[in-house]
Length: 211
Image (cartoon, rainbow, N blue to C red):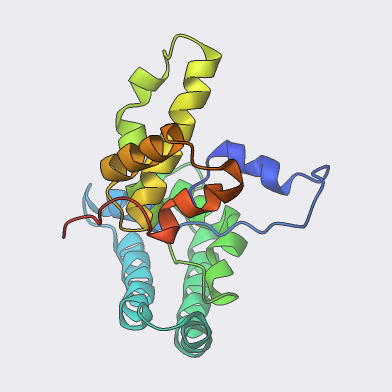
């Protein structure tokens, strides 16, 4: 995940419910270092980018594996790389001005270090939030329109529809076909007690997405 402040409520001390741990996104951490390398020679930042690239190389190889297998290989191969990144971070933070762009980039990585290493504890956790961000991109692109729905109820309805559309996409179902078929079924008296039959992941309604 990125560092959107709204997520902080999930781990607030006064929150009622099971404890939650946040997994942070290596793409965001890497991007800050890449930006520095684009402004001129930056051997420290380049070294950091190279180390992070090693993590991504491992992820590319194990992405198709089951979570348990991914976790085992991460512990074997990724953990040593992460330890090297940690040593690199400590070494250079002590020598770089905290107010410089590089110092700020290193401070960012240090601040979210525990969350950045969370992918080593669970094979289901991704190394970055790229998949999620691709999923919500259309929402971000239409953000200005969404700011003016005209009414609170309109905003709530927009959120519901957006969630249903993206759920269809995640399950390989064409959203338009699913919405049309679902609304038709409801109009024809589909029983509320059987509402689960209409959900996108049941694949009983709507046409599949084209490749």
